[in-house]
Length: 143
Image 1 (spheres, rainbow, N blue to C red):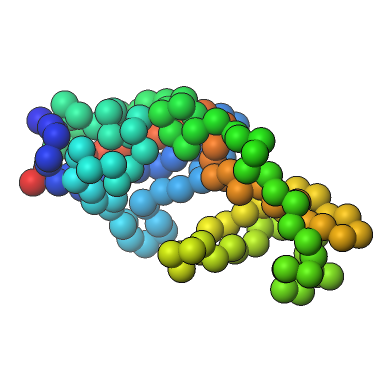
Image 2: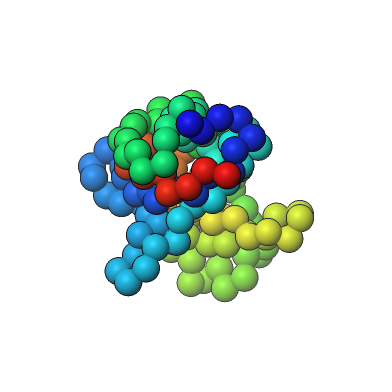
């Protein structure tokens, strides 16, 4: 049975409340199982908690509330940025997703929530923040 410190490999499909699949390890012709070590915070807390106690071959469907997933939406993470700081700002439209470089060099997707004469408002919340998530998982291996 899965416990803290185990390395697990599993197939998963993540869905939103309306049934939209936002992520899956199974693709048309092959599977890319998710591998992680339990207890190292490599996955969201609710996902980690749900796999503890499962066995190889076991399947499970579970829901993760925002507090155990990507958090609630934080209004302070919606920022107005002057257009002068955004490349190709004349092409930016409400509803688009832009990639913003973080100080560590990683790229983070942000949503454009508003555009006016001088500014672009960007929502830097995780795209899945505030959402109830449902996962279908199947344990492939435990090491």
